[in-house]
Each structure stands twice: as C-alpha cells, then as structure tokens.
Length: 306
Image 1 (cartoon, rainbow, N blue to C red):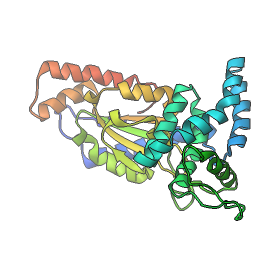
Image 2: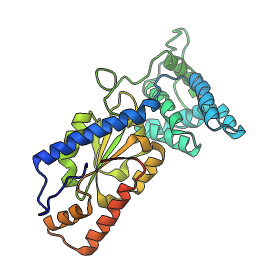
Image 3: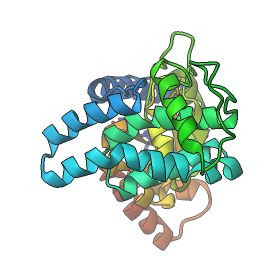
Image 4: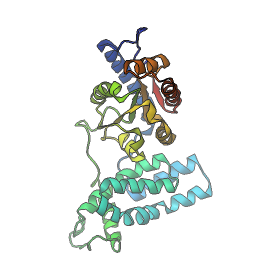
C-alpha cells in the first residue's frame, strides 16, 4: 500500500519504509501510465487543414449528429478568428502561457473534446512563437513582403504560419535528449501535512523526470495537465494536504481521469489520528474533519496508487 504504515505506537516512518513506498509507487505509476496513455499519445504535427480532416473523422465516428458536423466544419474559422486573431492582444500583453490558456478556455466554451485540445495545442504554441518575432517577408517566397502583424492584417501572417507549421517549423522540440520523457501526466501526493510528503515528492519527481513540482492543487489548470501529457514536456507533480480539498481535482479528472495519479501518504484513519498527536494537536473535531476529507481523496475518479 502507498500509505506509509505507522506502527502501533505511532512512530515515524523509517528510511526503509520511505524507500519501499517510493519504489512501489514508481512501479505502479509507470504501469498505469503505460496502460492509460498508450492509446492517447498526443499528435504533434498537424496543419489546420490536416487537423480538420482528422478531427472530422474522429469526432463524427465517436459522436455523430448534424450539430457536431456543423461545429467541426466551422472550427478552423473559429480557431483562426476567435483564437489566433482575437488572442493577439493577450499574447502581446500577457505572454505565451496566457495566450495558450485563453485558447484552451475558448475550446472549453465550444465544448471541444480533450483529444482535439491535445491535437491543436502544438499549433497554438507555434503561433505564439511565430507572433513573438513575425517575419517581414514570406519564408517560402522571399519576394513576398508581409505587413506588420496586427488584428487588422493578421490573415497574411496566419496563412504564412500555416504553411510553415505544415513544413515542420515552429514546433516545440523541448524535452529529454531521446525525444520523449519517460512519464507523462499529473501525480498528486497527499498527506496530512505537506511537510510529510515533500521528501517523497522530490525523490519521485527526480525518478519520473517531472518538469515541475507545484504545491497548490487548487492552482493547477487544465493547461497544466494538458502540457504534462504532451510529448517532450515531462510530467507534473503536485503536493497536497488532505484539507486542501478535492473540488479542483474532481473537475480536472472529468477530462483527464486516465492521466492523474493520487498517492496517499499516511491517510488511513489511525495514521491521521497519530499525526495529530505527534504534532501536539488532538482536537477531535479537527481530526474527524480531516478523516472525512480523506475519504473524498480516496473516491476521486482517477488512478489511486495503492
């Protein structure tokens, strides 16, 4: 079990216990990750037209219906106008990450599937990179001058970018030297107190090759999780304490159930009570509240590592 087992006297975990927990959790995460992400590897090289054709086939087969077909027919126009054009101001004032979050929020408003989000995200990332230093002449035809980039004349640049993206430019090459991180997804390590899980989190992040460690589960966004399951980006690890609550994680799991892994450390009822005694706090109401909230973590619809 991934829970660190306190003994009958409530003593702290030994180094051997921690190592066993780390090794077991790593084994289970890698096993579940291979199973759940093998069928959802993210596409990384779609032009707008290529993507539209593939998305029509995928979504029509999965959902069907005239409404869906109409939505997909106009999706390239919606992307071009409402994201790439209207998002220029956000990109200029707030930067690439804010633009990507804006693009994702538009997809959510349009009720676009997670799979489509994953497939379009490289296109948006490339557009952001292009816009940071837009060329003055076409890269494919040096005789063709391009106007300064603005919302009024963005279409010249959008068409130029689409050609360049299709040819493999403006596509992220970040990540490990072998081209792919060993783990993709979000790992959440939960304990009674964050101090209890910080050492395990650092060791696990290093072993999994995670790109980042964050300490606020309620600040993790859809874009964070999408990025964590992208090729070449590396996973994301988050530490949490039971009383942080699971509202945000439940919302994330609705879209990313198979990419989220929860490791519960010292979250059995007896372990929670022992932790409160150890830290000199034995208020029964607080103990009962924490035990009750721990059950919410255990019922989350994602990968519980045991």
